[in-house]
Image (cartoon, rainbow, N blue to C red; front, side, top):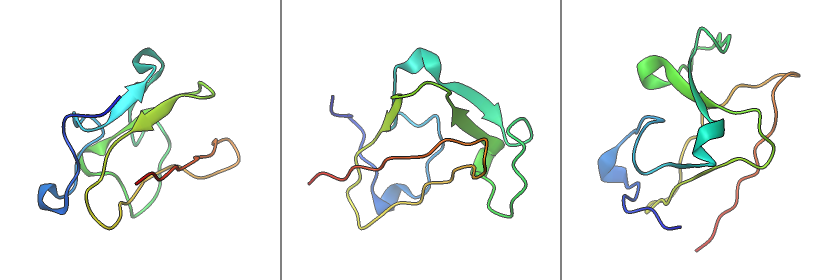
Length: 88
Protein backbone atom coordinates (compact mmCIF):
# COMPACT_ATOMS: atom_id res chain seq x y z
CA UNK A 1 0.00 0.00 0.00
CA UNK A 2 1.68 3.18 -1.15
CA UNK A 3 1.30 6.30 0.95
CA UNK A 4 -0.02 9.44 -0.67
CA UNK A 5 2.35 11.70 1.27
CA UNK A 6 6.08 11.18 0.75
CA UNK A 7 8.71 12.32 3.23
CA UNK A 8 11.08 14.80 1.59
CA UNK A 9 13.86 17.02 2.95
CA UNK A 10 11.64 20.04 2.31
CA UNK A 11 9.08 18.70 4.81
CA UNK A 12 11.68 18.56 7.57
CA UNK A 13 10.97 16.52 10.69
CA UNK A 14 7.58 14.86 10.97
CA UNK A 15 5.67 13.58 13.99
CA UNK A 16 4.60 10.00 14.64
CA UNK A 17 1.06 11.04 13.74
CA UNK A 18 2.01 12.29 10.26
CA UNK A 19 -0.17 10.96 7.44
CA UNK A 20 3.01 9.75 5.69
CA UNK A 21 3.44 6.94 8.22
CA UNK A 22 1.12 3.95 7.92
CA UNK A 23 0.88 1.71 11.00
CA UNK A 24 -0.30 -1.83 10.32
CA UNK A 25 -2.37 -3.14 11.89
CA UNK A 26 -3.36 0.29 13.17
CA UNK A 27 -5.28 -0.99 16.19
CA UNK A 28 -2.18 -2.53 17.83
CA UNK A 29 -0.24 0.74 17.91
CA UNK A 30 -0.72 3.16 20.81
CA UNK A 31 0.46 6.70 21.36
CA UNK A 32 2.60 7.09 24.49
CA UNK A 33 4.42 10.00 26.05
CA UNK A 34 8.17 9.85 26.55
CA UNK A 35 7.51 9.83 30.33
CA UNK A 36 5.17 6.80 30.02
CA UNK A 37 7.81 4.99 27.99
CA UNK A 38 10.50 5.82 30.56
CA UNK A 39 12.66 7.62 28.02
CA UNK A 40 15.61 9.36 29.61
CA UNK A 41 17.68 10.69 26.78
CA UNK A 42 18.87 14.01 25.37
CA UNK A 43 17.32 12.85 22.08
CA UNK A 44 13.63 13.09 22.88
CA UNK A 45 11.12 13.07 20.03
CA UNK A 46 9.68 16.45 19.13
CA UNK A 47 6.17 16.86 20.47
CA UNK A 48 6.82 14.40 23.30
CA UNK A 49 4.98 11.39 21.84
CA UNK A 50 5.93 8.07 20.31
CA UNK A 51 4.07 5.08 18.91
CA UNK A 52 4.39 1.74 20.71
CA UNK A 53 3.30 -1.82 20.01
CA UNK A 54 3.92 -5.19 21.58
CA UNK A 55 2.61 -7.07 18.54
CA UNK A 56 5.13 -9.18 16.67
CA UNK A 57 5.05 -8.44 12.96
CA UNK A 58 3.42 -5.00 13.31
CA UNK A 59 4.81 -2.50 10.81
CA UNK A 60 5.27 1.22 10.35
CA UNK A 61 5.75 2.06 6.66
CA UNK A 62 6.70 5.29 4.95
CA UNK A 63 8.26 6.47 1.71
CA UNK A 64 11.30 8.75 1.62
CA UNK A 65 12.48 10.87 -1.27
CA UNK A 66 15.89 11.86 0.03
CA UNK A 67 19.19 10.45 1.25
CA UNK A 68 18.18 9.11 4.67
CA UNK A 69 16.08 9.34 7.79
CA UNK A 70 16.47 9.24 11.57
CA UNK A 71 14.51 6.71 13.57
CA UNK A 72 14.15 7.55 17.26
CA UNK A 73 13.63 4.37 19.27
CA UNK A 74 13.85 3.12 22.82
CA UNK A 75 16.79 0.84 23.62
CA UNK A 76 17.12 -1.71 26.40
CA UNK A 77 16.63 -5.30 27.51
CA UNK A 78 12.85 -4.92 27.69
CA UNK A 79 12.67 -3.44 24.18
CA UNK A 80 12.17 -5.26 20.92
CA UNK A 81 14.11 -4.74 17.75
CA UNK A 82 13.55 -3.09 14.40
CA UNK A 83 13.91 -4.60 10.99
CA UNK A 84 14.46 -1.93 8.36
CA UNK A 85 13.82 -2.74 4.70
CA UNK A 86 14.86 -0.43 1.91
CA UNK A 87 13.39 -0.73 -1.58
CA UNK A 88 14.10 1.41 -4.59
